[in-house]
Length: 480
Image (cartoon, rainbow, N blue to C red; front, top):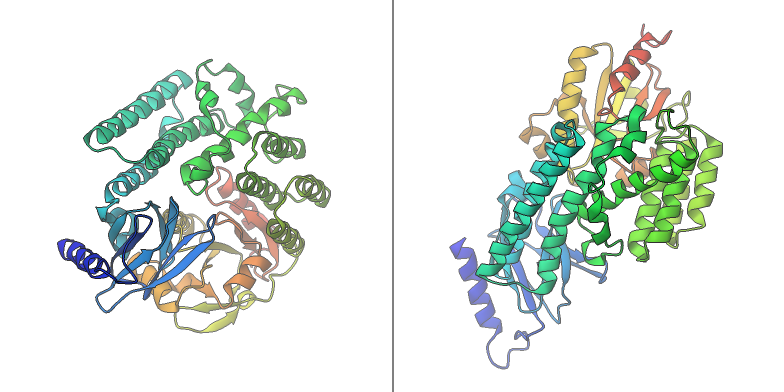
């Protein structure tokens, strides 16, 4: 890492020479680094809000460096080999990163001016991910226990951050980013809790939670544009609107009836709440699209889908979202139970091309993964391995949805020792994702031995998924 920092210092000294047209002003910044085991020869740096997207090429030493003239303060994304992370960039920063693609987030380290805030931010990311994996375990505890646990954890994290600031202050902007990431991760866990603890049959008891349980809602900012790319903030908003929509839901429902998250009235209530509480157009439009998409992906009612779409279209202002949602509805219409799989080409690890339906010769579960979501593809493959043992009558087909190079795809497969016999990638990923309505990774399609659709959208992580598979096996004529 020292050699990398020297590389940065020499570069800055060179461009800082007098009369050099590339000399650094107070509004400039530098971003560079070294990629160990690179997947490709470039790094993409972008900020969609500011309309910035730059391709930074790696040199023969797997390094890159880039000058950002007249930099605007913000949270930027950088992407390499299908994975990405965030970096806070402010005028005057000279930040160098070092990472190993085999362990992208965990190996990421920053040096240089501006590194300190970003190293702390990465630390909160990794901590949040670790705590999220433990959420289900803690969410089975009584509300009073869970509330105390989250409050203590939250306070501990804020105290640790306060000690960090005492050693060497950072800008108010960077402080708001890190503090927001800490806060909304804890807020999100509280919003998710009742859905895990009470479950569908007892959701009505949300009203019996301790009075202080949601006291943090007084501090919520629905228009925190600086946090709009953060998983913690978006996870909070998504669960929060699921939660507060329970009030109008139960106002019109029998309190003893089981909760149905796919009920049309409940989902329209969510759109109403988003429309009334969120002002920022980017955040509002994303939430409206995501909640509408969730409903459509889980509905078999053409009438309800048309109803929710009309509701959605009267509230969104994003024309690109409207086009994609209309395309989703059209795709879903072609994926109804009983219809055959669309004519799409897939490629195996031997670079052999097939029509997707030609690979099917018995009831088959088709699941999808992206190299951008490491935890998901690890968990989904692990889950499928367990299902294979329980359901030998079912075939399992894994399809990567990225448009990365074949070599990168194969390297990922080999790195995690996935079963290569069942691994494929799309020949035309963009077309295939649209045709199969694969707009979120938890979507799974189940077909019969003739490649006719049985279930167009199920979730292998749901509690009742194994019951669904048993039903498939018991269907007359499914297995011969």
